[in-house]
Amino acid sequence: MSQTDPSHNSKNQDDFTRHATEARTSFFAEYIYLLKHNKKWWMLPLILVLLGFGVLMVLSTTGAAPFIYTLF
Image 1 (cartoon, one colour):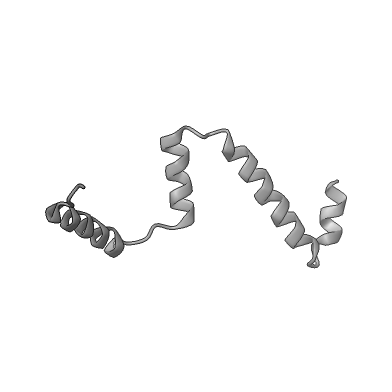
Image 2 (cartoon, one colour; image 1 turned 45 degrees about the vertical axis):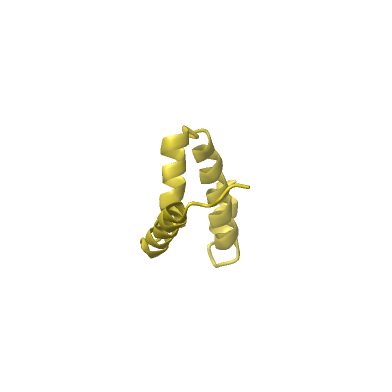
């Protein structure tokens, strides 16, 4: 049977508390980090189009709806 090293558990606990006390990053900051470091730039146009559709849906429920319909 293997015996656990108490210094290894202490190091893991220190890492856990350090990560727990760090400031949380926002969703958008994490997304930009993903795009930069994982080279997922193809996702950017997809997200922008989906956000654009979301904005159009919100605006279609307001008084701006007649003006939006003339664009299409």
